[in-house]
Image (cartoon, rainbow, N blue to C red):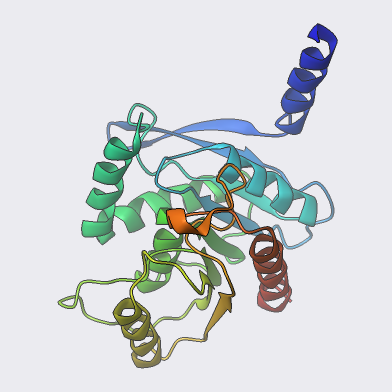
Length: 253
């Protein structure tokens, strides 16, 4: 039993051995992101910012960064909340996520700071994309809405809503939204408003629906019980990752 535990601990340490902690600041606020260098040829020094879900930086975000590095991209997991504000429960996560959703300029600022750190680690400022999960998926869309200097964004089961009072500006980044067809947390009115927004913004956008998938379908730590509203779906997880890969091949050609 002890031997098996040691193997598991060693495997976990080895899995994250390439991840480098990067402290940085937003004014006086201390942030801590995580960088992974591309594991194979990356002549254009393409970089991908990973925006975590509402519970903050977690294994899921780090694993995504590692998988991106295996594909040949530099990856940086962004710290949106700050290193001293990691939520301890869903109530705290809801308050923190709600603040940034209601203050999109602040959200965009934290994303830009992550982009800056990624560039400092060697990524090409002209070859950047942003991906995000759930709350982070909303952030990826905000990167496009704010016209941050990114070539494209990918939102995995992210929220799509936007305050009706906000002006819709032209969007230059290419947009890929990967959405659970049965996601109960994204109402049809938000989907329709988002699509209208993309048309008004004259964006190059795609939206792919995954059958029998609800919210958070890429999170392996969840059950597969769709009745809970958020559940893992292996098929949707794999298909959405492949869709992202194809999107990047076109984006960075």
